Image (cartoon, rainbow, N blue to C red; front, side):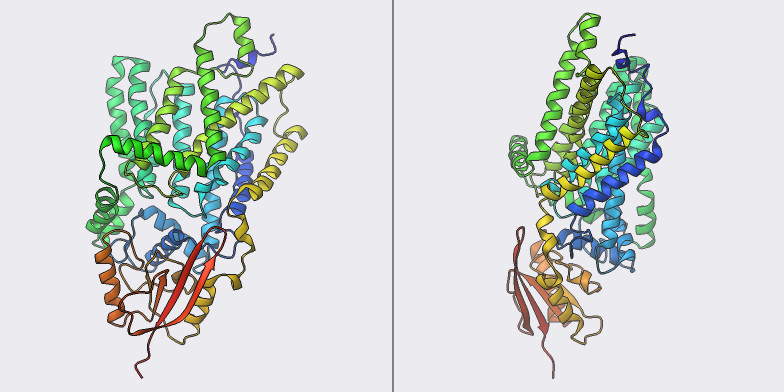
Length: 542
């Protein structure tokens, strides 16, 4: 038998069909623990996560679990599932990010298991996927767009990865047969979960379902049109299921209108910029160029994977005699055109919908990082082929000494590489004495005011609600970027009527602050932040 006959994927004992669930979960957990502990500022290695977005989610989640109703009682623009995650985190620790860190590790564990399963779809050995998965995690979580940890994009990322897995598995293993309804239903549920965190990543699932629809017809012919149409409704049914908890919760609290108006209407019609289609496409190009320079490592990884799969597709389309084909398939995986088109559509529509509004912030493109897995697939396939060519031996099993040492080495490299690559690592040296927030916290808590009312002006939630374990006194508990006149007027009414015992302002001296006196001011400059914080206290009436 030819030494490379194992390239026949239909006859090969696929790794994802083996009983490796425990090993997969263990290695995924250890990888997630390493990258999140080092890369996220929610980790215990950092004194505090000072990111205002993460603190605003924390405030919303904490208040939701204390009787406040999002969108009705407090204004913010992310999804209810994100606030639920942060609310659960606040139950673990209401004044630190320990709970958020645990949630991040859990989310990253699901991501890493998904990445492993994707790699196993294409590789031929048991060990190499376990070896390549941690390296994929390095490129994903050390990227600048990971930002400080705790983003909405980070928590919707597991649903993107598992959606990618089910799509790739279908076109790799099932096509030209139609996708089973149960898989379509799961895809709809995953899409619904993404919607309830931050729906601008739904472009991925638009392409996901479109490829299922057209793939069913292409693979099975006109006879499959009925099933393709039914699949669309099954997918929508899966999404609809995820709305049930929200409808019950907001229905009980008479806030369904608030939910729709704030989360859907304002995000769709007030947050995006008004531009022509041509202007939007150019803006997307301009945005992606900027993100490429900010995230060179992960984007070069994505580009390398795209080039490998393009060459692999071209190679698969070129007719060769059996001997040459076997030699070529040593390092170039056999690939169907439909697989390539599927990957391209998922990638393109994810980017289009994320940036179609013409707005871009550092962390927006994080879901795109999942496509780094295709570089790991290419590298892993080449490693397998070269090893087999020179040794004419199979890789050892995962439980063998070879497999154990390989995976252990990968995990060790993951931790070390994350430490040297992640842009967040310099913040590990900051102590409580270095951070303005804890000085302001101590002043508020030592003021003698019971349940102090705090108002955060001229910026997003800077963390004072979190460290003082207080709840907001104002619907606009932070200065939002939408409806600025309305936001500022509502906030000013809280200070004018004496509700606010303290006013925290960022970089700006607040207007109409006559009844307050400046008690603390500090310039906070680090490698990745530069701001001036001012704390005002209401003057005594005596």
